[in-house]
Length: 284
Image 1 (tube, rainbow, N blue to C red):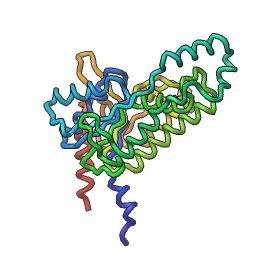
Image 2 (cartoon, rainbow, N blue to C red):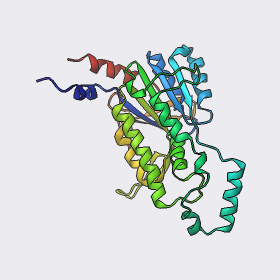
Image 3 (cartoon, one colour):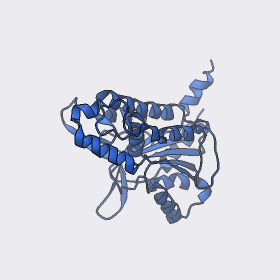
Image 4 (tube, rainbow, N blue to C red):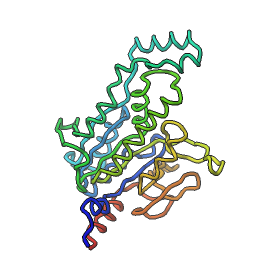
């Protein structure tokens, strides 16, 4: 009996990868290895210098620019009036009163969340000024990259509270839910390769009581949930000799690998992930 079309499509979905590491560990530069494997890259940049890093890595590897498309959507920056308003409120109000501000501060200026979601519906390449349509219609000749979770998380928080300096628990929960829902959408519905980069921080593990290195995002409750959406969870680093490496085994982090080999000193390269998918897709 033939499987339903949706079930077959999900079974052949290209891998989703989470690459986490500190600033300067090669996370953005490694995106170029998708292009070296012949994959057309679409990058949502949420960091101020992300586009520069992409151009540098493409130039360094002498890759054709027609394999690079990006849109830059950083978190909003506060205007001088919003900074003055925050300063006045912080100076004159108690912590309790600050947390109970219902309308947030400057929420009417928070346009980045809507811009980001609209860009997922119709990807706008800032390099070529072309439109490429809904990212969930991209096929396995393409890769979507969200670079990075840090900027994405701040955009979500700003959408919930603006520049409010002390969000209450419900507002944190709303912002965290937005992040989780979008990641679930991207990892479930994308039919292209999907990668998200993330910075790291050390958080206590509520189950073991030990601390672990995990992704940097909103609150302690969200970070442990994020790796489950990904088939490859990778830790990036730069060694003492200046070499960029990946690890799929690490005593400080919960990592996992399906297409990549197990190891602590792997080259930063998405090619094995692309090759593994191509092998799977040709199997009967």
